[in-house]
Image (cartoon, rainbow, N blue to C red; front, side, top):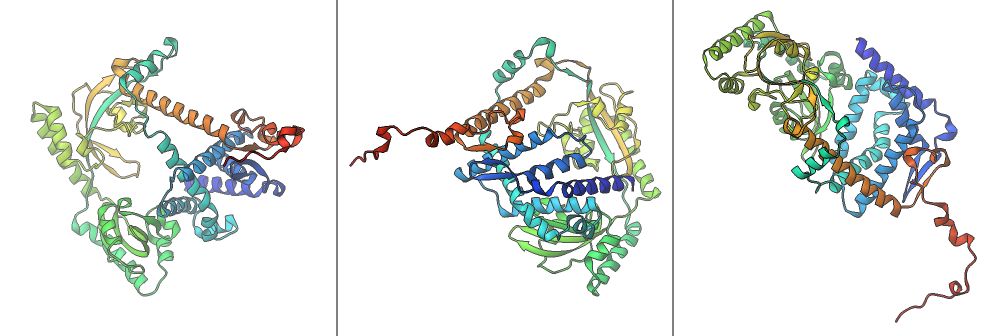
Length: 476
């Protein structure tokens, strides 16, 4: 409840900040970028969001916001020239995701509409153009950097260019594998939860309001929005949910079905090609002590088998694939990935970024050893058992090419991408007419972005020369 109160307070601050802006500034043009304009109200809204997220008030941050909006305009205008676009379904998904987050933060759709002073449908229409432009700008930037490659020579050149006294220091890192044993209810234990979902479905079929029942009884984050999940494609849900959602016609209500998250039933609101808009009600079973005891027994059994093996690593990888209930690691030999470097699929994790429960156990382990099963509590509050394997440990050290090549390659790649984007902007802004309002011309981030006034006015201020009064010669 405390987290919800903080989120709600932040949301109220956001809306209050927007409403508190002086009316005479809302229609002011802060910048002209080619054929597009940026309004003062655009900047004020983004600044209010910045403050509402807990950041200290800092009026100079509006300079950064303006630079971001100008950059977005430049990219979006180039996208038109290069025929870069996004599908309407992508825009719909992004708008729906934004609205779900706002509805959840506000504590329901009615409360959100009260804060906004308009309906959700009206507000979605208002924010849609900006969201679409942002998506197009992202796609355009991806095109600009699509051919950027980083070779080993690039990495070495980047590393050699770092002053020796400025080399980064990397914290102690470990490679850790895990086998997770999640408690599972048996058929008899599940029955009561399935029956509750069945009862709610019957009430909907009898005419009760789906959204109202979802807000009262559904047990996930979409409950505040009446169970509305917005539009999504086949990749947006677990397979059981996807199969049901894409089998039904608009308006139809599914039977109760089970996923890893609980017992659901859903209603299809609308279909658009390979996109479906649904709402659902979910009842999530509560784990019993008996199921937790069964989970511990499984963990103890697998641990005993591994202790008999002379090749712990080989057997650990096999056991993870065969027995682990964690889908993210079981097919990766059980190895955890660095959450801050998932794209590179790095298994090296700084110890200060480890789950505290995992860090506590591995701190007393030797490299190559396997821990006894231990009870853990997940981020969702659910309990289970884990077995850990400590593959390697790297002590804190100054960066070097031998130990840190993957990290340095990522840094070099990011640097190359940033240089490519900066060079593109530098060229593009010189070719595009831009006028920055005097209020923002002193911003360091906007220095040199405004088109010089003489470029526009010199034809009006200079006396025409005699030759200039003659019509241009037309070649036959």
